[in-house]
Image (cartoon, rainbow, N blue to C red; front, side, top):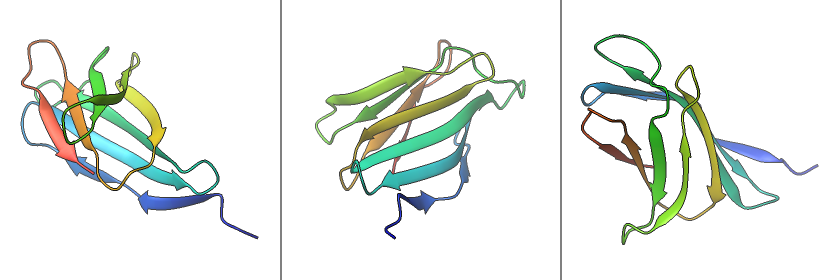
Length: 102
């Protein structure tokens, strides 16, 4: 039986500034050739989820592939068509925009 999902990364925390990014899971779906990213954004200053923070997946030329916003607890999930490398951009009003390549 073929695997449905391959876990690309179980979890990681990235805290370069005032936004703490906890990625709880990155999954690759063999069947749909897609990538699912699940995580939470919190404020490093107040340790609370950031409501309505913007998460965008960008190509190399900064074209937007997909985007979503966090829920009331700062949680998000985003599903995109797989390609070798993506830049994930995290932004929130009053905070510097953060980027990370996955």
